[in-house]
Image (cartoon, rainbow, N blue to C red):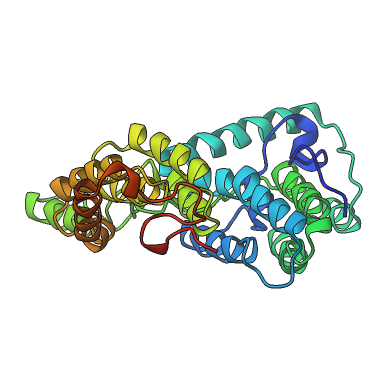
Length: 307
């Protein structure tokens, strides 16, 4: 199996030095934000290293696709501000290319058909034909992503009025709304609005992936990055405590569990393990140095990391 050294595409928007996050996720540019999250969760499951039947090399490749392509694309499209900036860039690009009136280079047969007979419905139909095939085989991911990016390029160049995905949390204004809003209705809208996503979400997701593979050092690196992005996130400290516990660094594990519980007294990871950790450290402190646990044993505390 060919193992790409760089996870990137070269056709479609990439030929103009633009990232194509929609193509990476296998989505049309008209997809709303709710479906962006749904598709990301599907791909995270498909690319999970524990998928049965894969070799060690295939598991590593799948993990890299998830961390280097899929997760960054999702992070951009799921964040209102980042998605807005990205779509503004695409609009400017489309305007500039339409003024040049240059015919794009298209390798995909479907993209050539769409360019000849452009229509929004046809564009969506072609994307839906390719998308189910995109992540079926690790060898074909980049090829199908490039095919999708060519469709996206044609959509940008041929549609007079570009329609992109809607915002995930900010409701759009309607013509039926009155010009002024009462304080009570504004308050109600703010209460019903879903909470903002943590800026550390991507790092937390990657840490969870590394923890599932017992790659403690990599997990800790992601969690340290998450702590900088969201220093009041109890889950981040709880996960750090879990990682330190499996590295047999009991004091650091205890400190992080305590930080997590100070932020959120109900943080589940810390609640689950801090009492066991206190018991373990007390027992070890009572033993003479000669009785310390053998550092050559394969597992972490309480059996974590064994096997």
